[in-house]
Length: 83
Image (tube, rainbow, N blue to C red; front, side, top):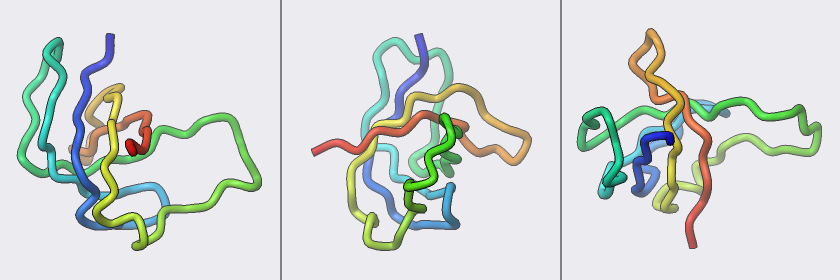
């Protein structure tokens, strides 16, 4: 089972990377997470119609299913937007 981190996007860094405020973590998490984390969205099957991250997403709450922390200390994650 993957670790989870939940919270709002506070800054868009580029088309695949954002910074989030971690407000909730999964009860089953194996690793510790800071109050703010940089998240890299794990690539999925190519989707030519997909759009990149936009600053319009700032404040939107996301759930990150963390695959691993990369060499740049980013959370390499599957990301879902919460309502």
